[in-house]
Image (cartoon, rainbow, N blue to C red; front, side, top):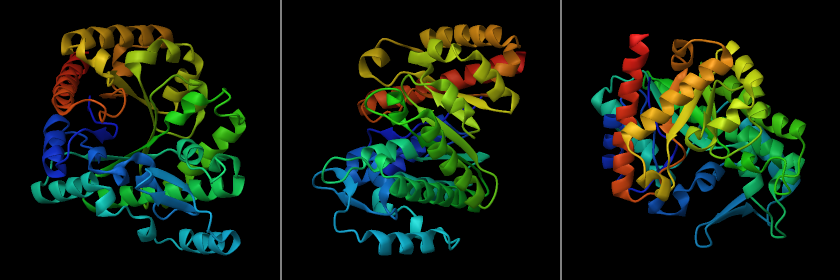
Length: 348
């Protein structure tokens, strides 16, 4: 049972951080978002370069819709580039993704025996909901720009997958979409059908342009309409099992359909809020996990082996808000839980 990470970390040395990650998660290392190196390493900023209409203001720590952007002419130019088949214009730069390039170099130098590498990007609902114009109107409410964002994000994710495949590793790409916790509220007043359209367009485009197989995960670190996410064309649902497992259980039929088409669950078992993190240890989290797996197996009327064989372990969210010592302990705890999980699965 492999373990991996979600995104942000509180460290500042990408080479040392990647070494920690490879040691803790040897089966599926991920590239860390080095958020303490500056705003360019924040998820939305990392995802914006190469996308239509966006302007990054590092001083103000914002990504917005560029008011000087010549809409019709620039959209035509964007689609010409996006549909050319060349993913290079959607590459992340080294100064905005230090962890990504450090991971590529480490894997190339060390011949890391892992079979898969994991990357991530802002999910389309979060990206379009976060990026706003000068009047505060989110891109999400501009259908034309949202469609362009879906296309661009898909290509940025496909570029990551291509880089992983160049190293001989199977690519796993998560779309981190915390804005989905707002679905059904006044903060996200769009229909279920519109959300599904946005997710499906991005994921299907990613799979078509990745140049080969890619496992696509969707991460939401709060409560949401899990049925909606489980219906999206994803391979992995990444959720905060520490905080919201009981909520997911309410969608037992949707979970059953997801499993029936080969879906996996990434269990966000290690909490990343400081107060919760500090009160837990490997033993207490292991007890929580074994109880939850048993409950899900009972809900699904299936065996423990069937649940565990489709499980990954992760933190509940990014670790960027923990301090460095806590993040190191989080890696250690997650690695220990992964080892126990593998032993448990092997015993069944």
